[in-house]
Length: 507
Ligand SMILES: [Zn+2]
Image: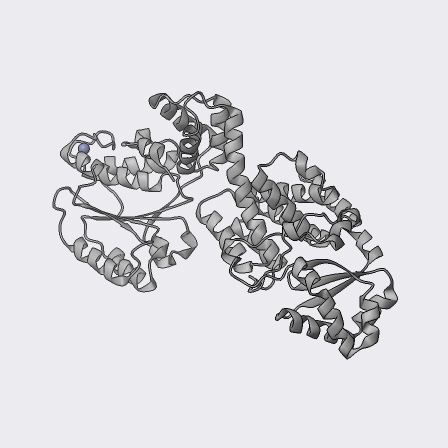
């Protein structure tokens, strides 16, 4: 992702940094009084200015002519820091170096007096990534730091930093930036770079930035690359909408195929990126509403106005989520939406929703799908019982290589299934012949019967075993059968209208 504008927004003094007022004041005072702490711990979401302030602090304590706690930005030391060639500023990204050896190297450095400035400043980014041994080595240094050393530790995940490190540091909790603060930066930058964009469009981007100036500028970058003319609100809406929708659709993909680990990782990544999880959960709910609309009437699909690719995906999601399952998704995501707002750990309610909806990891070794071009005649009745005609979700890319048993395949071999069953038990076939194959759902062949007598016959334990054994013989894979009565499918309609009511309360 391009970060052109983010690099352009590079405040060189405390006064130029937008937001984090209290933190700036305390740091500036420490410089003014020449009493910096030996260890600072900067915690907070990504892209809110932790590293920026750490570098300004490193510059300020080493500036040859500071004024009121501000670096002058023009002396030899300031210029050295700004150009990234100041020997007494050591920056480490703990995400790439987590071993104890690297920390030992640093500790070797700590012993020596600064070569250019007054202080040796060590900025350790993503400090929570350090190994246990590395933390222990760091702790020893923090217990008796040399007078000339300053450590600035930055992290997005404070709960992973040992209490012993936290207690030896001066801790600053960086806040998400307010809309007005992000707008302030945006206005300055658009002016400086002569970028033409409608104010309403800027506001929308500021909102989408979720309090992260880095994310905000990266979106602004993307949007600005789309047009040489003035960027409009409508264009911005389009671009933002695409990003949000594809994230939501990817998540729903994982939920539908039962990829618990993938879904958990998805949520954790969002949290790591400092995304506003409440807003994100809301966008999931809005997407579930679209699925619902399509389930109620597949004609709605054309009117929703998504791009072709998204539209196809939406259709598939609607087809592969049975009404009852969709209702569960809605209920648990709604619960997560309500609780993320008040939860001290924002990702927790979402993770709970994922774990409740997917108690086991079923990232399928076999994924079952019906493809569009093999749409079987038997399922064409689907629309009438509230189940859309659209084919169930296709596999995502990483699943393409696995065995695929789709509805078409099952139908093609159904005669063979019947013949084999006949060998076991003749009367079973007459019951089974009345069933229609509604769909393939994960590893279930869903059969619908007009009368309960026939359904019950197949449902009898010993008979079910026979049918499933034959299915495995024919398709080379264990498949289960799931039986319904035609009239039971009517229940889907009730579930769908209940879901409409539940989602209606979202506003
Ligand atoms: Zn200076």
